[in-house]
Length: 243
Image (cartoon, rainbow, N blue to C red; front, top):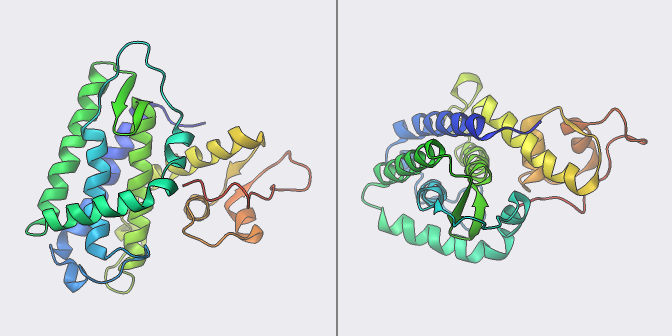
């Protein structure tokens, strides 16, 4: 079962706090890795950190949508990422330059404003918001930000492997946030295909669903399972990555 808005809100607060506490000790120069290539092709580690702020700012600028506004589905919202990849990269690079003097403090401020906006809109019982890319439910907008934080936390871990400890308790990914994201990404697939599937390895499933791991059926069978589909887990090669 996918999470509701209060669960997503709690997970978003927790995931941001965990990720921020992991990045903070690295300092603005990220232990000398700020200008080094990240795990995302074409992005530096510093740009990846700046993108966290950009991602959260997308929530901060949301406003209540007029009554009767029809929201887009989360799957459609996420599905627009590939076609906007160049714009996203440029916005991220521009922000990285803009906040270059104090990037961590700037990202902190953007995230704090975003979380405050989410709490305020939730308190006002706003259902649909106007985001940069159109109208979307507040629940789905918050979920999209949680997906961003969990996925990019994984990107940062990969980018700083061997530099920063991310094993066990030091991992910047909150397990509950990871579980919620994994279930949501699976729900998108299930809705499209009609299968009865369950997540067995949230981290691996998220990597497959977001293109962070090369797709193969053996990994897929470890990441998700089914008790009902004849022949085992369906081949999702044509449906992945989701974003």
